[in-house]
Image (cartoon, rainbow, N blue to C red):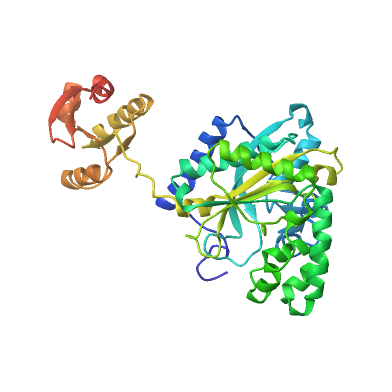
Length: 414
């Protein structure tokens, strides 16, 4: 093998600000999930391929074109997760989590799809995920949407993001609407894009998602779900919107917003932005009351959402740079050995501490100042002999000698 080793296309390496943005999103997510009483959950990065084929639908692009699927050494078909919900639903069934309903859980981590990489989209990407399983009341829709809205507010991006909301109705509503859409699109079949003609056979609701300009007039004239809403479905949606209003969550109705798979019911929503180009959705979710039943479990109402960590990170302001409390400047081998002990004690006292080994005193002081440290601790042979160190306030320039054993207390007291 010759030549420079390259990263795999569609993956990313992060250092500095990019990594800080990434983890700022995760930290905010963890704060907000605690406020809403969601537990953390961990599920495998890979599952039996059937878990995703059954839950995402054999005919979807994710299953047919995008999944990373392989046969392991035991001959089993394994797939790297393209999303979280299917794995959490599988665990709900196989781990006996039914005893905890309503189960409110969150997860985050990598997911994998073989897509064309573009801004904010990778083949190994990272998602936040929130689910409420076993609650069929409109209040759970309000709660999980409110949680997403509060996360966006916590990240300081709420004003740049719009919540779009729709209802898919109950099964009777959805079936009637789907039939009307098939009839409508069939009449215009030869005017549709190639992709939409394929969807007409397999997943007709997804035509409403079309990004092809030639489909727009046909989509605009398509029947809307409101014409087919049952009284029960209309009542459910009105309770969701009233709850969002009561919670102070702003929303916009989007009657074209859909979820193509049959197990989705009632509420569908997306938080979208115009600041990321084509990748406009930063959080998307919906109610999937039929999913667990499709996996062989009992009828179990559920709702959830997923958010792209990379996309959310791109929207946020750069976090404040991490700074040090103390920069240690040891002069000489004996001082370097002593500095190891001092650094350990300072860190155990909760003080962020770094060591400047290289260069002359001027360069070391410059490095200490650049690190943002509040203090420099200077130790040489003379200081060691007296059991003390020079403590310099890098803001004021004031310098004094302090007993080595008292350094942590002296710094913390200031």
